[in-house]
Length: 147
Image (cartoon, rainbow, N blue to C red; front, top):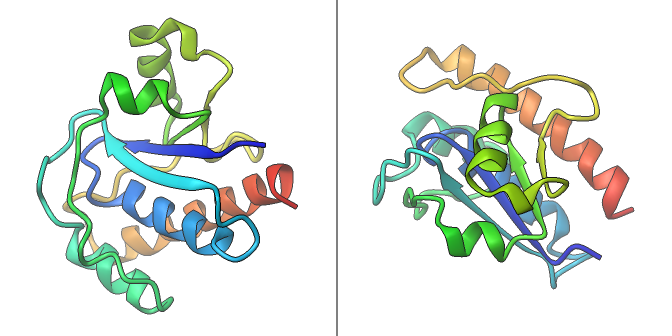
C-alpha cells in the first residue's frame, strides 16, 4: 500500500496545493496513515497559495491558507512512493532528473489521458476549470489505489 504521495506542479502555489488538500481530505478517514505533500519544480518558495486557489478550496470547506510554496528536492522525490504531476512534461522532467523514479511518477490525469494546465495569473474561470480536472484525476486515483 502506498504510504507517501508527492504532488508536483511548477510554482507550488496554484495546482499542487489544491491536489494535495483534496487527496489528503479524501484519505484522512479511510487511510489516515497515507502522507500527502506537494512541491514545485520551480517553486515560489515561501509564497502562499494563490488567493483564488484558497477561495475555491474554502468553498469546499478545505483550508489551504497556511500553505507555503516549496521546492521539490532529492529527499522529497526519493521518499515518495507515488509522485503525481500535472503534465506529461513535468513527469518527463522528474524521470530525466531522477531516472530511478520511473514507474513511480505519473500524471494526475493519467487514467483519463489529460494534462492539467497552469492557471497562474489567469482568470478565476481558468482556476475553476483546473479544479474540475484535478478533482476528476484525484477521484480516479482514489478508485484505482485506495478503494
